[in-house]
Length: 197
Image (cartoon, rainbow, N blue to C red):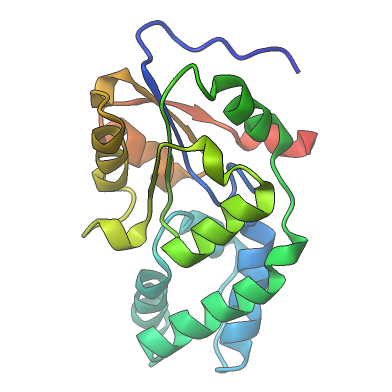
């Protein structure tokens, strides 16, 4: 893999977690499928990817509104996250992005800004062996509004003590890329790299 030169003026780098550092999206979808099926509900894979970056409880609310379900938001979200946690040992790294984390470590302040919950984000980073690489980890619990709102990325920049316009974001979802844009940050869409795993 050739080295990715960062644009001029970049002073901090922020990574999404699910789908960017770790190829966890298939595991999340499987956890959703099983959790919803047990409750006689469903979500298409296309809708799942459309909602990339949206907090779990909010996804349950969206499904209730969209399909007329009456899923218990907290219980359904907790069941989905518990099932995902059971599947975590199967996660695969997105190798090219992990290589960049190691390459940039010590050269730039690094943060994770994830729409996931802290317990699972921490477990994912531990499973990848990269938890110590980051100066800040921001998750859904840290902000009032998730992606596509800019809150998570702005919080990450603040914790890195780097101006938003001097941050570069690595993301894999439309909502995440939109959140980076709203935060005034440059962004790299890593989805073309997923075939290189």
